[in-house]
View 1 (cartoon, rainbow, N blue to C red):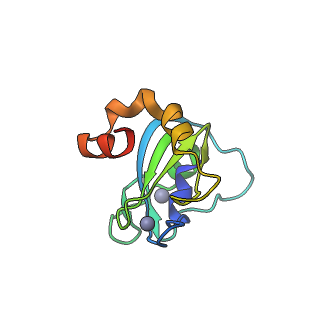
View 2 (cartoon, rainbow, N blue to C red):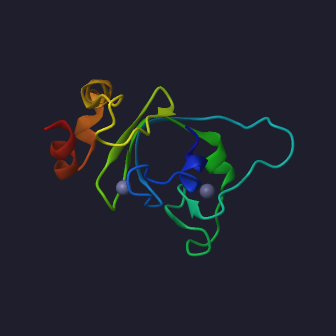
Length: 124
Ligand SMILES: [Zn+2]
Ligand SMILES: [Zn+2]
């Protein structure tokens, strides 16, 4: 998913905005689309803060960055959502189609890069 998506995503479980992001793998691609790309309007993940509170927002960077592997975290309810193969998996905790086991297996090799408390909460 593009980093810019953080400007649009709220927690499917409690509606909190914005979500926090831990990036495990990302690629930076030049955007070849004609015209101006849509830039962050509320929350700029590249600067890590609200537009208007973080100074200059070079949001071409948010549009260029594709998060291949990562973890989205809701600071309000604690729900976590993995990004696997560039796709954010946004099913809320407890949803019948959500597979925490499969998510853990996909992200296990990055577990060491999370802060201790978060790592043990997700990976046990
Ligand atoms: Zn931005
Ligand atoms: Zn939440």
